[in-house]
Amino acid sequence: MALPGLSLPGLGLQPASTPAQGNSFAPPIEQVTRTENLPARSEWRFETSFGSPYNLRLLGGHAELFGVELATNQPYDLSGVQGAIFTWQGCQLEITGEAESEYAAEETEYATEWLNLHGMLETLRSERPSDGPRMLVVGSDNTGKSSLIRSVAAWGVKAGRTPTVVNLDPRQGLLAPPSSLSAVTLGSQMEVETGFGIAPTSGPTSMPVKTPLIYHYPYASPTDRPDVYKALATRLALSTTSKLEEDVTAKQSGLMVDTPGSLGLTDGKGNISEILHHLISEFSINVIVSLGPERLTNSLSKRYSTAKGHEEAIPVLRIAKPGGVAERGEPHMKQLRSRQIKQYFFGSANESLNPHSHSIPFDNVVIYGAKPLASATETSSYGAAEEEEDDYDPYTDNPTTTASGSGTSNAFFEKVTPSVAMTASLIAIKFCPANSDESTIRDSAVMGFLYVADVDEGRKKVRFLAPHPQGWGNRALVWGGWPEAVVDLVT
Ligand SMILES: Nc1ncnc2c1ncn2[C@@H]1O[C@H](COP(=O)(O)OP(=O)(O)OP(=O)(O)O)[C@@H](O)[C@H]1O
Image (cartoon, helix red, strand yellow):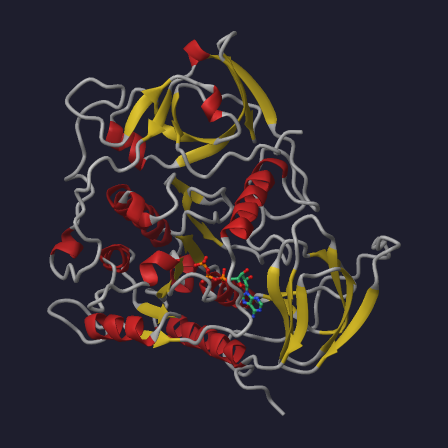
């Protein structure tokens, strides 16, 4: 019997191609190993703690984690992960280690819906090769947005496409630490354990390197600094779309935009976030996928699914939240951020990296502190913004003063002297020179991140960890109060 969706274009189910990795997998003696036989179209859901080993191995059949196929006999370390190993045809798994919860589930209709979405994207790619799908996924927190994007991106890569994934949620980085808004074109398949993989490094790696375009937004939510968020989204949209213009295959493969859960909420009158309108307009979105409540989908449909003036209609699709998606509390999210930061500097178990130490006198370093929103100038972040939104110009709110303080106002940054308060936090190296004006510093892409390992106020020296051995010349450095310090990065 053919499985629904499997005949859709672009998803040739083939035997797992990666060979067995031998017998290097040696479970700790006290760990109990058990096997699970999963029937077709079921999944193994698990929630595991950080630091407590949890290993999975595919013994037979086919299985995938968010679209990425597991290789037979390869051990995968899935500690600190909430997820599900899904199988279309049935499989046998070997599991070692303790989970906070784990069970086999057969209510997996969501997977067919996601696969049908992949099929629809493939149809759009074939029908309009010069103008691929530009999909935005919206919904409240923990509705499966990132997992959906990971899966359809992985299926796209498997079908020979090179989709571009855009992460607009600063709380979780995409090939970058939290506080990043980033985009990457996937030229190769993702990893089972690390998802999109690790950030590029100066050293040799066994994994194919994916180079993201990164902007720095050192706040947890778009509504913390909507002016900065919108300006950076505009920058990211411009850079991404102009890059796609130079790459026919990537343009045909299309964009997949992941949004933070706060943009999937409507106000009491059912109005959509004005920032969401901004993203739809700036990324020229032509498919909207809603994982949110019916109210959000209705509001989006009312606004976008019928043509208005010169605007084309944008289809709005509603997809149900998968049953297995778990609420993630703040302690879990904090550990996730900490792990992403560690991985940025030290890599993963499969691909370790060696960060470099740079000790610099205070006088030789110029650091700008990112300011929180000082005055409540934004009265409401909801509303239709029907006309003005499309005309949003990031330059209109640009102060012309230098960030170093001459002139009338420093809206975004203030110069700061290194202090112990910075210890264990992240600093972004911008591509622009240190004496650039505020808006240039704000809008510059990120060259890389530094970790403040130590500040010696007595000797007036600051020690950074950097992924690269080279210095960064006279570039602007920006310190934000967010994400929180990760004190156990350097032991
Ligand atoms: N089928 C599933 N079974 C078990 N866990 C799942 C399943 N699908 C997703 N998850 C897990 O649920 C959590 C939330 O999913 P995901 O990150 O995709 O949601 P999200 O809507 O992007 O959340 P947020 O907006 O808060 O970032 C993740 O840890 C994810 O790995």
